[in-house]
Amino acid sequence: MSKVRAELRIQGLVQGVFYRQSTMETALRLGLTGWARNCSDGSVAAVFEGEKEAVAMAIEWCRQGPPAAQVTEVEVDWQDFQGAFSSFVIRS
Image (cartoon, rainbow, N blue to C red; front, side, top):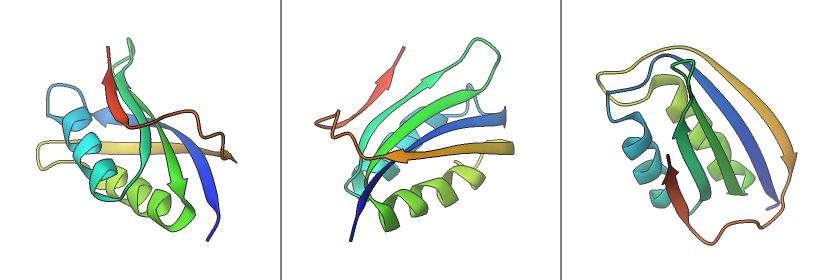
């Protein structure tokens, strides 16, 4: 297995629906590190680092999100693994 990093921008109804909290729970369950934060344009940004298969599973989860979310688009930028994080956190 190889480790990767992915930066995401999630569009739609993704703020005020526990999207960041649910993303953190999903990332931790998958053994990933990184962060999620709300953006001023109403989207959510996230970074995942870890095993490529687990990152891909997190991205697929982000396409749906928690029950109250209505995701319209997920932009993914695959990058080389950097090992920049020790856990997954919610940023403000």
